[in-house]
Amino acid sequence: MLRHRVFLITAAYCLLLASLMPAQEKNPDKIIAEVQRKFNQVKDYQAKVQIIVDVDFLKVPENEATIYFRQPDKIQVKTEGFALIPKEGLNFSPGKMFSGSVTSLYQMEEKFEGHDCAVLKIIPLDANAAFVLSTVWIDRKEMIIRKVEATTKESGSYQLRLQYGNYASYALPSKMVLEFDLKNFTLPKGFNGEFNRKQPQDKDKKTKGTVTLKYSDYRVNKGIPDSVFEVK
Image (cartoon, rainbow, N blue to C red; front, side):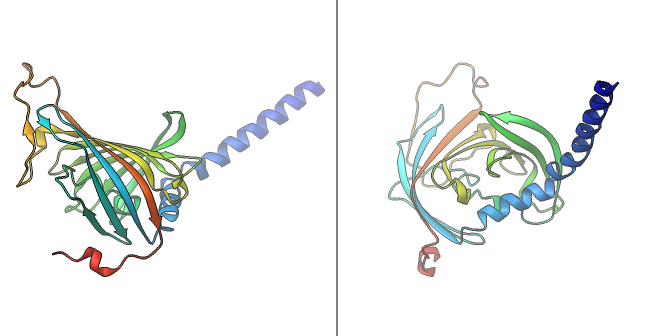
């Protein structure tokens, strides 16, 4: 009898915890607010970026650039050579993704690359928003974005995977891999890369291009002069 009562008390306690904890853990607005809070520690930053492009029909040499960022949305990329970077690449930030009028939905818990993540759906309410729908994997322990899948109005869909190093506490990545849809990809004016002469026989076999960005030499909250962001 005593054993039965202990079992019932233990079961009731577990049910109580199960009813209380998810309400806190599965609130998408609270999760997003925590991600934004971490990134908002960054007033400005400067970093070196190694850019590696993998597109079937293009031969693009590896390049290096310096990126400058200042809250809320000032960004400048400086490179000596040509840098083939879709606009969703270097200018990605949690603040930009969650800003404006959006609604968020908690979808599920899922492991991604060994990390326990909350998967959220982000839907813009503004008809002029650049993206239609985003799915975001947020690391529950570190409260940083690990993966993004987004559908845009003009550039098709893309997937972004992020890795972190010494600056994870600022939500600044050490590596980002951007995979985008080549069917919606257009070359910018002045492109001086080389086309591969050997085209794949099945043109629909590979429809994705990949840009890998490796970050180093971060300088965070050191101040950046206005002249860096001036358009010349």
